[in-house]
Every structure is written in structure tokens, then in C-alpha cells.
Amino acid sequence: MASIPLAERLRPQNLDEYIGQQHLVGAKGVIRRMIDTGNLSSFILWGPPGVGKTTLAKIVAKTLNRPFHILSAINSGVKDVREVIEKSKSQQFFNSPSPILFIDEIHRFSKSQQDSLLGAVEQGIVTLIGATTENPSFEVITPLLSRCQVYVLKSLEVSDLNQLLNRAITKDVDLKKLNVEIEETEALFRFSGGDARKLLNILEIVIASQPEADIKINNTLVTERLQENLAIYDKGGEQHYDVISAFIKSIRGSDPNAAVYWLARMLEGGEDPKFIARRMVILAAEDIGLANPNALLLATSAFQSVAMIGMPEGRIVLSQVAIYLATSPKSNSAYEAIGNAIALVKEKGSLSVPLHLRNAPSKLMKELGYGASYKYAHSYQGNFVDQEFLPKEISGTQLYTPQQNSKEKEIAQRLSILWKDKYNK
Image (tube, rainbow, N blue to C red):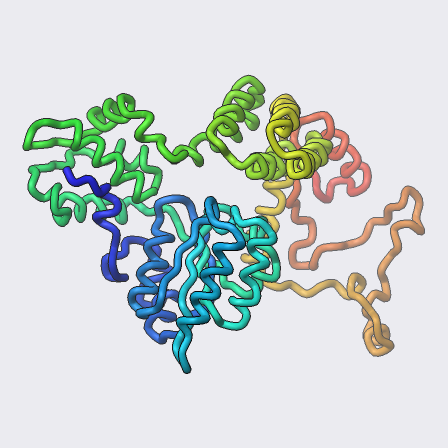
């Protein structure tokens, strides 16, 4: 077998070889249009590992024949950024397109590092392409984010993975010399999780373990070989999404022991503690919600504390909050309510705001009856008065349903007293 990894040997060189992300690179895709027109603007590619972020950036640069500079946020600093910017200035000629600066894992750049990019991006000295596995809204500074479009890349689908497998065994210079037969794909796809690089790594591990010229790949063989080569399979933290999923589900399932175990796995693996804390903030609202409103406050405080004190002390804060969340009563009623409301908005469209709820900043609006019959709740006993707050077309629609926990039983009782049978389903 060649010393160059299979994933690198099969790296696409143009958009026709690129698999997946048709919403971006298909016939009507925005990135394909930018390439076809040559009108390239700065953008950030956001998606899970192994979906082709780096490859796409290289294809863009190669197709447009632009100078291409690549930096990794893990081992690059402000000095490296400035050196690339100075080099890009020297490469600029009259009316020549700007070089492309690709920054991998841009979410790991500090504020000062991101600040150092602003002028060059704004002046067109470089066209920035960033790649991140984290939500750019959280990790990229607002001034830089406002200068870039954000494009979301998706995990590869089964059809994409099948296409990739077929290409590997029929086009790769080494594998096509072997007689490789894919009998089953379930284990290959399950372990790869939509990650093209991981799929090719698994395929390479399995094939390398077979001395025979005729290789038949099935679910049993894949599972056995991955268990034997766990260290190789997990190299570089490729189980990132599996472990955070186990952590979240353990807290949701009210198991504090499992929660701290998966927390320890992430911390020992070098996971960003702010990423863990941020996921607990989301969980506190989504899975605990109104059953224990203090959970969101504590999770938010944990995020602030970890950002302030860092590691290793931050592990104690994370452990405390993980246990607290795991042992809290659970409710997803707020999550369900906003989902129901959004579905209703999509179904009904923009219904008119009732006149009595409208703002009336001008005399004309007052004359038209805006806000005229609105009843100010604080002027009534108990700070409540029965009036309609929904558009008449959906009057009486119940979007929030209290669940069976002590806090929401109190909420349900209060709503019943206030609204009688209006929202009592």
C-alpha cells in the first residue's frame, strides 16, 4: 500500500470530482456560480469533519488560478497572518484578483488574531475562506463575520458514501489492483457517520488487515477490525461528535455517573471546555427548561466561569453543572412550544396583528384605532385581564403544553385559573 493515505490520494481536484454539497456546488449552487463568474467573495464553510471544507477551498483556488495560502488556527499566530498579508500585497498587480487565504479551524483563532484579518479582508488584499466545525456566530467576531458569507456543509448521505466507496475501489491506483468486493455497507457507513475522510480511513484499515488478494468487506469484518485498531480509528479526535452525543444523552437520561464519565473523556481528549459548556447551556433550555429554570442560569454561569478561569480548574465547574443538569427534572415543553409556533407560522403565513395590540406612535394610527381597545393588565385585579392576544384566525391555539413535573404543574394550574378552558387540552 502507498504511504500517502487513501483520503489524500482520492482528494478531488475539481468540482466534477467533488462528492456531496450539491446545494453549494451543484448547477445552481452559490459557490459554483462564484467560480463560474470569477466574482469570489470571502466566506466561511461551517460543517462537521470530513465533508470537504479544505478540499472545496483548494478547488476554488485551483479553478480560479489564484495564489493560495493556508494557515491552521491551531499552530498559527498573528505573526503568521501578517506575513501572509504582506506576501499577498506583493503578489497584487493591476486589476489582478486577490490571493485566497484559507484558515482551517478559524473558530480557534483568538480575537486579536481575527482582528488582524479585518483590514486585509475589507481592502480586498486577500479573499478569506474559513473552515469551522463550530457555529461561527459564537466563535467568529462580529466585524469579521459581517464581511463573510456563511455556507453550511452537510454530512454526506448514503448515496454520496456509496459513490465515494465505488471511486475508491475502482479509481485508486493501489486499490484497483486488488479484487475488493463490498458485500455490506451498514457498518462502514455507521462508523463513518457521514465523514468521507473517516470512511476512507476505515476502508484502508480493513483492506490492510487482509492478506488475501480477494477481499470481501462485510459488517462483521469492519466491526472486528475497528475494535482491533481503535487507536488508529480514533486518531485525531474523530469521535468528537459521538462522545458529545453520549454526554448530552446521558444528562438527558438523568445519569450523572455516565455524564461525568463522558465529560472526562472529552477533557482528556483535549476538547475545548467552552464547547462543552455551550452545549450544556443549550441542553438546560431544551431538555430541562421550565421543570427547573435555575438550570439555564447555572449552565450560563458555567460557560462564563470556564471562559474566565480556564483549565484545569474549569473541569470542576463543568463537573458540578453536568451533575446538576443530570439530576434535575426534565421537560422539553419550551422546545416543543417554539417548534409548534414556527410550524404554525409557516402554515398560516403572516397573519395580521389585532388592532388593539398594534403600536400607535402617530396621530393617524390612533385615529385608525391602533391600540384603542387594549387593556393594560396591571390596571386589573391580579394583574390580569382576559383579552385576545393571537390573531383571530388561530384564536385558542395551544402551542405550549405544561408537562408533568412540579414546576409546570404549578404553571398549568395558574393558566387554568387565568384562562379557564381556553387552553385546556
